Image 1 (cartoon, rainbow, N blue to C red):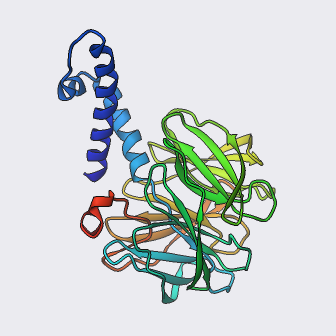
Image 2: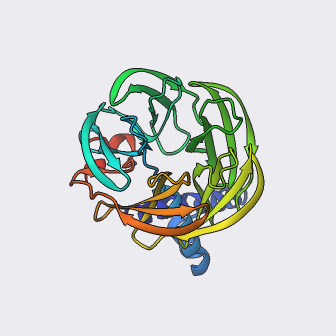
Amino acid sequence: MRLIQVAHKCLLALRFENESEEKAKKGRTVNPLTQFKKIPILQLLIALALVARAAGTARAAISDFNGDGHPDYVLQNACTHQTAIWYLNNNVYIGSAWGPTLGWWFLVGAADFNRDSHPDYVLLNSNNAPDTAIWYLSGRTFVGSAYGPSVPSGWGWVATGDFNGDGHPDYVLYNPGTRQTAIWYLNNNVYVSGGYGPTLPNGWALVGAADFNRDGHPDYVLEHVTGQTAIWYLSGRTFVGSAYGPTVRSGWGWAGTADFNGDGNPDYVLYNADTRQTAIWYLNNNVYTGSAWGPTLPAGWSLVAAWCAPWDYGYGCCQ
């Protein structure tokens, strides 16, 4: 319901802006609700699905925090802003520890920005054109922080990956209005340069990045409004080919990717926000080879950020 409300408001604003601009030239005003009803139903449903999917896209922070070679989950509590590390052996929970409390930031990823062999938190202050920050960790312990570059208006932060092979994680950005992608090259938290990546086809959204064909270059993970996924193979930021991945079932969301079974191939992490159940889908490149349930999260905790407006802090995010 929350996603539909977001989609409704976005569509309303877009339609109202366009109609108002045209009719203002003729000295007339427009009722936004009347104009909303004039959108053809098929176009409306497609637009609702696209906007809702974009609004609901959230990524998990998954990395190896205890140095045992197995990726771990980072959980976050929308009410207390506390984080917790759940240590895993493949899909099996083996222990946990508290991580730092976020305050008014949202956790969206983890990567080693200062190259001390410990993954760090990537934080945003909103889901659209956010400021970014890096929280440096040693295991689960906060040791320092720095601001990263701010994302420009109309763009969203999607993922990290080393796209230019310099050993530093880079930002992947996505503009849902134009479906354009961009890579921002970083040295630790500092923006060095950037370039456009490929533009996505209509109906698809960029949700993640990992090296699926094991050529040393991170690739894009795309998701269609139907739940179908696709891998776009890249060389640097250049598109070189693509293949369909497995389709995510209704009720589940694509949350992240990491190699859980140690075969050298990135796997999908899925999350059901209603049941708080997690699942691992094992892949060989783009091909589904099997699956296993991951741990179910306790009430009040989530694998992904609970996006809410600044005025919702401590209220809307806790519902």
